[in-house]
Image (cartoon, rainbow, N blue to C red; front, side, top):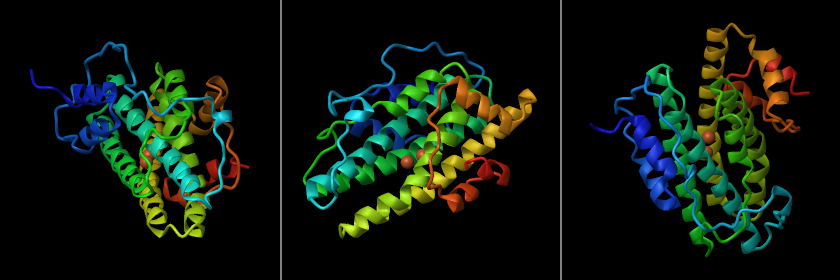
Length: 259
Ligand SMILES: [Fe+2]
Ligand SMILES: [Fe+2]
């Protein structure tokens, strides 16, 4: 039997080598059959990860000045690590949850492709600075949210794209300013490209979140507040990128609640 989109996504999620994972995700064929009805048993080894970078608790990541090439490389590395995690998070949404419309799987497969592009751009930029992905320690905070929401697609969509990826929208202007301040116009241009695509990812998250809420007869705003508490999601902190959040489909009520 030919592999389905969900099979291919799972195989890429299990891939340990970042370069092979990213190349495979970039080449994902969104027109493959989905087979949404099949319940797939979780195999061991999710997500496939390389030996390096060393994964350490979030608090142990040293903040460096971007005034040195090494400090700038550490910043680019940190974002590359987020993008590698983002490939895994999107692939996980493709294989894990059964019984959704085909468009759900194709949307997240398309997101995985864009995350792979982001990782590739940053990895190559890092090489230009004389470093490789894996050269700095990194943290596991993003995948932890995937673990906590593995059994609940509504919680996954609420707390990964609509919370963690949306935080990326907020963080983007400061990262871009840092790179520009260090004279790294090429790095800043990559951040612009990523922000543009991430608005789309959060918009896809918002669309499916509302679809899932409607199907379950739930109020999106009240349900989000409950899910944040139930899964101990990170609390959002200002400054918020309200323009990007609005473009990504958050409602005025949701934006007001950010505080
Ligand atoms: Fe991304
Ligand atoms: Fe994304």
